[in-house]
Image 1 (cartoon, rainbow, N blue to C red):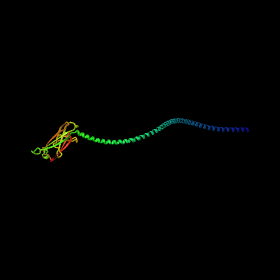
Image 2: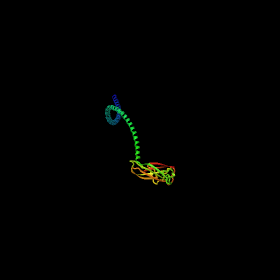
Image 3: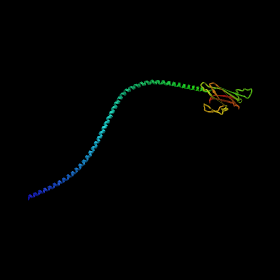
Image 4: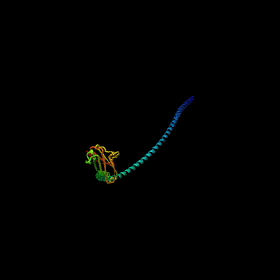
Length: 287
């Protein structure tokens, strides 16, 4: 009996232990499954992160390669710049050395030029004095030339000279008939003169105009025709006109005026023109 009881106790204990073991196992199995799922998810997450990291590493490697290439280009450019700078420095150094020699030569040349310049300044001042003297001489020569030119122009033109004005009274016998000075007795006026030029005067036909102005300044016996005065360009009537042919010999010209009306007292002015140029004037006073 006791043995059976013991066996039963043992069996019960075994069963209890078995049940407890199953419960523990089941609990443990459940925890392992959950851990397995968690580990699986963690693994997948790690794999995703690993892929991201690999892609990031790939991008990083590309960037690194680009940076390396850029750094290489910068280093190459830097080397080129340094080489060019060194070459420039060497060139400038040679130039500085040469320039120092040239500067010394230039200083010597400047000294020589300064000495030469002083000499030139003296010559320049002397030339200025000579130039001023020459200018004075040129002005004197120009004035002389103008005078000679004026004389030459005068020499080329016709002149009038030996003017004679004779009045006549032809109304009474046994009276002084010529050089009458009484205005109311003058009935004729004879005007004679000579005209001629020089060897420089051009030969050929010339026109002599005579204008006689009364004491009031009015033209006497005005012609219907007119001539142009060369000095003023004015168109002018005349009292008498005569054409001559000049052949380098003096020509005598005579004009006769018949005064049908009595003359007024006063001074009469007689103007003589050759080809429109005024040559001489003559006054005649009557009482």
